[in-house]
Length: 107
Image (cartoon, rainbow, N blue to C red; front, top):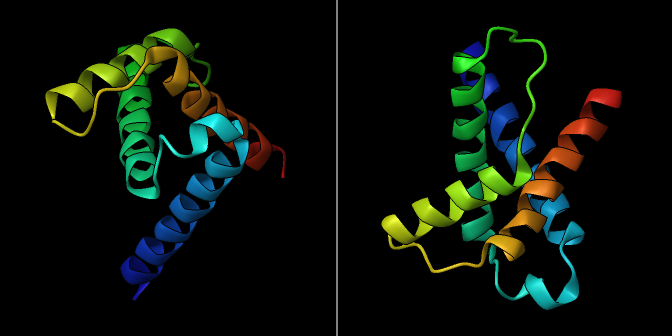
């Protein structure tokens, strides 16, 4: 039962994160990133951060280079045929994700 509860809680957290990013995006970018793409980017950002943590000596504090993360997302999306995105546009998604995480830590 606990495993199912964890999955449900994770899905709810993901939905809140994606909703926050959707609201965070400037109006001209909202049409470029549908919900499916935002979930895809959300998962990739998680993988990117886990990779940084694994490479870091200090797991409590890592520095996330927004530009590098956005470039990674763009590269992966193109490679996996999700879409062809501009790094500057995807930066908004990364910024929104990090902003949401900062707010969640404060709560």
